[in-house]
Picture 1 (cartoon, rainbow over the protein chains, first blue to last red):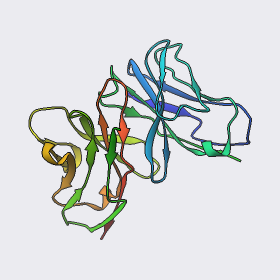
Picture 2: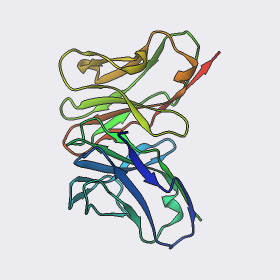
Picture 3: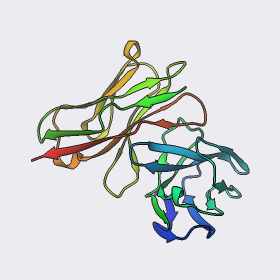
Picture 4: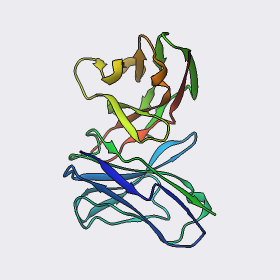
Length: 113
Length: 112
């Protein structure tokens, strides 16, 4: 089944404790992206990747890192999480470009205390 | 600046009634336009998209949207709403290769 998977689905952590949210897709998509969803703000892009080893900042990249060492995986790293990063995070992928149909993962709800 | 606006934060309709969700965009040129639906606890699913051509676009689940260049709008419609349509709906636009900009979303409630 074609899908985007994210782990963990729920995470509660404390300020400053490094964490990684994994994202994997099995559709051989070139483009992958991370979004955060906050009430009243919709989804905002954090980082995106056009292909292996090619990443770039989205609209809200501060406090986040990403890497793309394999085509299927695009982990999101929070090296020193803060409470303002409490949010619902979505990973998405598309075949080639950002304006192709994007397939979304189920989301990761992160709480930073 | 590029932006997508969904003026209605919350809409309630009765089951069987018609539905229209509004979306306006602000871009330098006509962007690619999308409507996504998010059911509770789920990720986003594409309902339909507009790239060019016919301004009335058909999507899944009986939804359609009309692109109006003069009004910079891309409103989503459904002639008869079902209880299972209760969800949050996002309009999105892309003007380039990399960035998808979302509106704030409209939460739809359906009364039986």
